[in-house]
Structure formats: structure tokens, C-alpha cells
Length: 477
Image 1: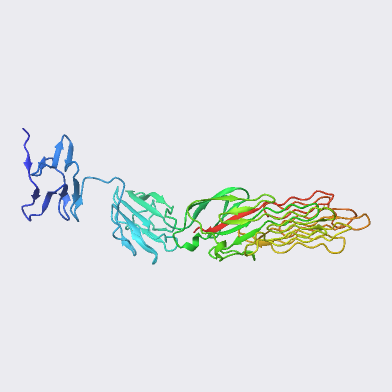
Image 2 (image 1 turned 90 degrees about the vertical axis):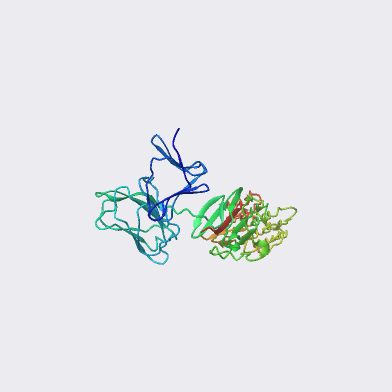
């Protein structure tokens, strides 16, 4: 029969301090400042629970389910380290200090630079440190060795100067001294800002920009937790432009913009912030994006820009321009199409220009985002397209949404001046007849992804409307 000694506690005779104590399922070995050395005896508590047992060369402390605890302030020897440190979470360092073997430290340099002195190293010693406030790049942490001991083979201090940096040093020998065995310069933190994806993504300062030139999805992975106003996105929504008619120039697609002041850039005069109907506050979800081709609307969330009105077609000496984001131009005696249809504020576009009758079937230009289309004057010329507007929402100034120029059907004895396209991509009108300075064989299409109107054509081909665009901008850091 194996001999057993059953006790709850083992205390020293000299001072009655704890050697081994079991309380419930917790086994405490040693007292404060004691070194603990395991023996080969089999000891059990009075309740039969194991304190120490040995089977061959394996020594077990406690029983299954027990917690083995060193008394507060006690130390251990003979167990070795596993290449890790004990992180000192209860003592954040804010000034110069001396590290101890086996410990890791959180260094807060937000109040100024300071130094971590390494201990006198012996083979196998290990020390770690990490940038607590991500301020090493502003206020460095200096690492200094003990006496003449080296750091990476050099007897000189080093400075940690990378934001979020963490390092681990192991003392190898007197030749190399402390070697950096792990160096992380990544700064893995939670992101409190709006996070999203979709379209063609770019960066401008602290802003992220998503540009859609075709259908897609703007997916918000997480909304900002900093403040609600950071979830109000800046946007530009431009619809497809109207095509030129058999005479009248096509109107530009509707142009709608909102600029959140948190995303600084130079907006167009049509900025609709802070009007409540114009603001879009995003949440974590997917937002389908529709970018209109010629004569098609563009849509983002609650915002829809109306496609441009096509230019008027000649019928019995006149042709009326069509309504739209901006109106199409009339031809001959025809009236112009109305812009800002349906109405929004600020207006998404302007009216087209009227035609001016016989005998040359002169036509009006399509309306643009900033101006109405030109009305054909009482000469041989046709009306020009209305100008577009510029915005720097993408990071550079770009003008979009110009109206198409009206066409001109001229007699053989008169010059032939077709209308020019409005700024921002409007197509010029086509013309037939004499050797005028603007005698195009066909109407010019509106420029793609500007929402500009196409140039009118009369006895020549008309130009198609340019496709639209959607741009979304927000603060991401």
C-alpha cells in the first residue's frame, strides 16, 4: 500500500508562513518573496484532493480543475520561459524607467519622449515594449542598454520612432547583446470612421472618394462612431444628357450636388447642403447605384437626377424641345423644353433655347447646368448650348453638364453657323449649306460621363447625349 499524508495546509515552523495551501479548488504555493521548488513527495489535502504527486519523472501540482497560484510577490525558479513576457498592464510608463527580465511594458510618450533602460542581460533574458498612445512618431522612446552591453551588436542606444511600434528583445550573448526578435510597425486599431467600398476608389487628404461611371453598389461596412455628421456624405449625381434632335440641341442631364463641410473641396454653385431633402446620411448597408446612359436618370439613395431633354425635331416648320434635367432646344418656330423637371432646389438644370423660324430652320441650344440654351438669333446662326458647372469633388476641378448646340439648315447663298456645345462636354450642332465658320457635317455627341447634351442635326446626323456619373466623398480618417 502506498503511503499518503493528507493535509490542507503546510506551514513553516519558524514563522508559520505558507508553504502549500489549498482553499476550494485553488492551490497556493509559497508566500510573498519565496522561491518555489517542487519536490517529489505525494501530498493530498484532507478532502482527498491532490496537492503534489509524482509519477515517474512527472510531478503534478494540484488536481484536475484546480488553479495553481503563486502568492503575491512570490517568485519561481526552474520552470523557464516560453519566449513570452508578462505584460505590466497595471503600470503604464510615462517617464524614464528600467525594465526587468520577463516583462512587457506599455510606453505612453504623449507627454514627451523618454527612455527605457534595459536590465543587465544574461542569456535568455527577454523584454518587450509597445507604443501605448501611437505617439512614437512624435515623441520617440529611446532604448538604452546596461553599461557596455550591446543592442544588435552595437554598444549604443536606439530610438523607436514609428507610430504604433512594438519590439521584443532577447539577450543572446556578449557579442550581439540584446537582439530584436520581433518588430511590428503595424498599427492595428479599431476604425471609428465611416468605412465603405464600391466604384473606383481614391484618396484626397482625409477623404475617400468613390467614382461610379456605370452601375454598381456603394456598400457601407460601418458607419462613423465619432459623430453623426460624419455619416452625411458629399455626393455628385449627374444624369445622362439628352440627344440632339432634328434641329434642337439636347439638354444636359440633371446635376445635383451636396458638400458636407467635413469633406473640404470647392463645390459647384448648385451645392444643396444643408437642406434636409438633399442630405444623405448613410448607415451600414448596400446602396445600389444607377448611372444613366444618354437620356437616362442617375440615382443614389433618395436622390434622382433627371435625364436631359432631347432636342426638338422639325415638323411642319417647327419642333418643340423636350423637358428634362435641362430642357432641349427648339427648331424653326418651335419653343424650348423646360429644365429642372421635376423641380428640385437648388435647380438641377435650365431651359433650352427656342428656334427662330424660316427660312433656315435655325435651332436653339440645349440647356446646361448653369445657363439656359441659346435662342437662335435673327440671323443665320443657331443657338449655343448652355454652360455646365465645375466641382472639385473628385480632387480636381471638372466641368460637367453642358447643353448641346442647335443645328442649322442653310440656303446655298448664306453662311452656316451651327451652335456650339456648352462648357462641360456639350456637343456642337451639325449644319448644312454654305462655307460658314461652323459647318459641321454632323451633330457632336455629348462627352461621356459628363451628362452633357448632344448637338442637333438637320439633314445631318444628331449627336447622342453623354452618359452621367456619380461621385461619393466622405471623411475616412
